[in-house]
Length: 637
Image 1 (tube, helix red, strand yellow):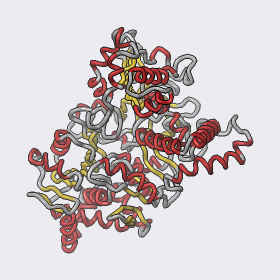
Image 2 (cartoon, one colour):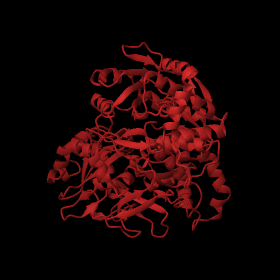
Image 3 (cartoon, rainbow, N blue to C red):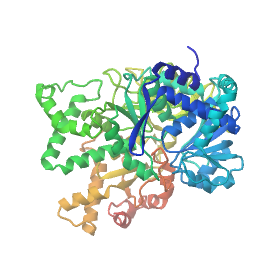
Image 4 (spheres, one colour):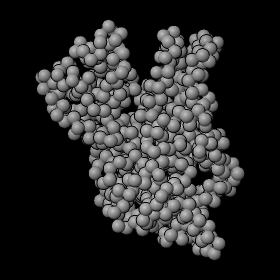
């Protein structure tokens, strides 16, 4: 099989699907449609414009914008011109973070949208290599800025007399040339730039197609940032290879406006599929349950009854229906409950929604069971940017998914599980996930030391823990990060993500959790409470929220959620008893991107949480701090 470049890939599918709609974007209140052919054409015109501006082969362009057609045209323009796109997260707020990426990548130009241009203007004086700032929207320009429309006009002129030069440049691009420098999501002061080649991307799309099959012509609404390679591969390029279309959520002046636009876009586009990460999935679930609650106690009871039985029937997806095969569920009542309870929920997602493709972090099995029960399954996958990113994924079809697993391994790709000495472990034993394949990054930009530690003899050491299913070696189970391991006073190690995700997903009273034990006398847990849910619960007990009595009752509710994993609890046996938390730290500050306790891909940054709550954690290791209703916990509520 030919090792395609992204340009080969786009040419192939633009030629195959031509006039079919590829891009959907809302402009001035109206959804527009752009064909495959037109998408490619716009990329080539911008490539000519970049060449007219002086972009040489291999030079870098930083791109910071919300997801939109112009983002995709710009990336294609950079790539067709033989350049390297440096996609930056529009969630970056720190001047240092933005300045570091622009300078470290050696970017020659910056492309920015209206919502991002002020960030660029704040740091541009500290970015001496930047020759021009290209503004996507028609704003009043400042010195050394140019509109993207002017770059496009330059491209139209360039093509009149210099088309041969562009053709020569396109022909010079090879599969091992860099396509992106994708920066890690900012859990350290100086993130690493991941070098992803043209072949990394096209190989990973081919690999994805070995585990996920979708009919041609579906529509995907992309609600994740386009800067991440997950949206590139599982969204942009995967849908292109299936003749499908992608729609982007209308942006706004800030991220809050964009979030408010998501439900509107879902209702108007009526997507068949969306990409999701656990934080988004949890938010959808909470909104669904809030909507059910508003319909009154009768509907809520029917919903809970139908949900409970659907979860029992679906089991772990691959084994659905056994032994729970009572005729009443298989027959009339199943249809009735689906029509009166679950179908209206799906209508809120456009009415033709089929499934989510999940990634970004571990997804608790209970959340997978929940969405499957209401008829919108999340098929969880696993990967990391260094693998471009997809390593495995669950998918529709009885033998293609096991809830709780991270899915079937993509093909072709080699994998092994290694112990701490690098020795390969047999199937069923947990160790570090190590892979080899064409999706493995070229390395870290300007960081040979980290590259050498991460890629050894062409094998990518992921830093993630997991095991290959003994009964079905095509399936991988990811259990957590090596960096996240807790270490008890006797030296035993434990990965906390499973407990953290289960507690967060399984409790309406808890929004976020971080488990802590660093050779400590006992395990503590930092909990971000859902205060409105707790206040409602204590009101039902006849207590007035805000009083000491109510706060003690709220703490008892949280304690009960944590204790549900102990002997006699509803989750008994899910996790080792010795690692369950003995001390609770009730957070007074939620984990957000703004305070650094969550990164731009909505993952909790464990080290930042531990630093922020260091004093509280130390207090929790004292006799007073171990008491549930200690003064600090009371004050946090």
